[in-house]
Image (cartoon, rainbow, N blue to C red; front, side, top):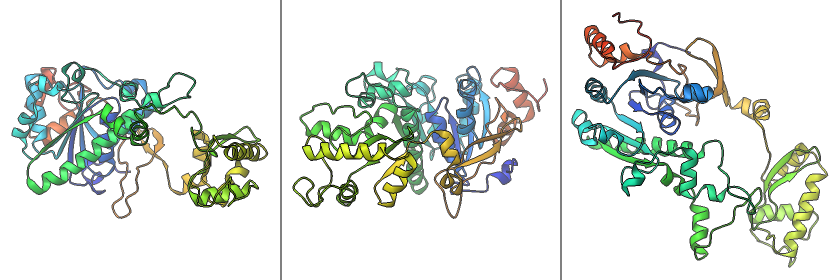
Length: 412
């Protein structure tokens, strides 16, 4: 693993693309991190007055979502900070920020001001409630669970006879981050063809609404009756849910699709092609006596076998099934190992950090991890020199408290 910045960045499908981001927590960092893993040159502007709390709250998450990045710890809203910020944008292709709606507008750093510095810049705003709409919502703070609650996503999670529960871990942050990455690359393609920049408004709650097309479509199709929470089984289909095996482990299986239903019915010793299990049926319905019988047989089938036996037998018949893995089982699984899902890299202290590898896999221009997550202000001076600042100017920024971190290369 090479820590020389120039050589390290000569990889991936995005080599030559420059990204600046001013984000914290998870949605924004994930969006930028994916670009860094695919070869982009990424500079992270960390708030010098309020460093990313994920450094201390969830160090493992922080180590994953800021690797491969250079960092400058800077107070953007100051006059000097704004000047540095705009100079950093001049040679950037993408800028990503994550904050409450219109935060950068309030600092006088509107899209138009950024485009004056770089007309081709792609600007991605990530927020809880968006940059437009009802004013009192725009300025609301948001986290993953707030977005789940406001978007209706949380209402769909849990059991029908109990209050809704938040889904974990962090689906709203991750889905929003993915939308941020997708939209940044889509806008970049356009900007490179036309020479005209773009501004993207990514909100957490809209991102979570977008992935609920199945349940929301059901809501609309059924005269706006709220679909029930599914718990760990399907509300309509039999043979679709969580089953306990003889060793106490659980498997999740999904009997859906005509060919799968046919194989499952025969497996359980029932008569396929009968009135109860007609040919071509895409599912078996729980409310029917035949569905209740099928469900009873499937429960007994799983109870009389270990989880490995159930998993092997059903998958041999191409009936979708998986043992419910914990993380230890994931790490011990040979398919995970064969696909190199887990890897190691040195952190900022030189210690080896184990975690999840770059995904998805690019065959001709693979991504890689060339650097661990940096300490606060690690690259302040290098980044500023690359932006054209002299050592004297850099020293002044330190003296004005625009920068923070360990002042190693510029002496007072």
